Image (cartoon, rainbow, N blue to C red; front, side, top):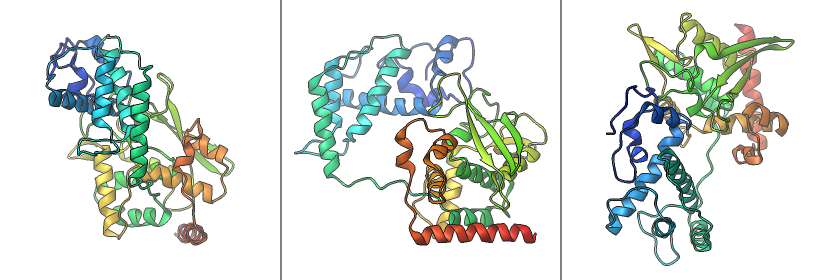
Length: 364
């Protein structure tokens, strides 16, 4: 474990889990308070991905017998790693990964060098590009990864009916799921990296990050999201949800969280256990949600399915793609990979569920 300087790192940035990234090659180094400050220029989840890629690179180094080294790595190192890690036409091994993943790892290698103040080699290398292109062709021949499935309204109703009578933790996860669905949020954006203890206000959604606005047709609520994947440094994004007249209302979900927090400046999506604030982590939420959905016969749904589901439902209900991009905080055409077409039957079912939920709310 790397040594720390005069100040402890933010609790969200668990340096133990970033061990490979924090090493200069294979050498341990003292991590100062300035290093920690620079480290927080990346989101914690991004750093975890970078660390994964560096561990893969270190595994390749061990295989080749070049176990000890310091940065910078060479262009030849990168080319050889890509040839080892990528799939080949004549041979596929257990350590092979997709060319797309390799390209992500290369971004991590660049960040690794930047953090340690080393010059990353220029990759204007036709051989490297050809190697990755060839591996991409092998990837394309293989089994195509299934698209992330969408959460649909029937899934949300099952979650609500199951979790609403559960523990305080269950209720917090339910409200999180409702906001993630209607806000088209990534789970990592509105969950926490630790389940207990202090939170870094610069990377956490707190109760103080909620604002509201009354409109002619209801209420809008806005969450300030600072660790959004597509956010520019120092430019937080606003997650927007609108009030609805049913039990899946995201404004009511946020209101319940604020009431539960008892006026404290703390995690928005959390709960108290024996007087101690507990924060909902991504794994905590996803594991519980998947368990509840499986109990209802719904399998294969992922944390990302809420963002996919919220966008797909809006598209099916006739919301313009421009508005979907604004609400989902997309600034490029990548939003299209999140849209799943609704069949005529699926759309009719969704509309029927909305009508039924609204009718039940009016009866209450």
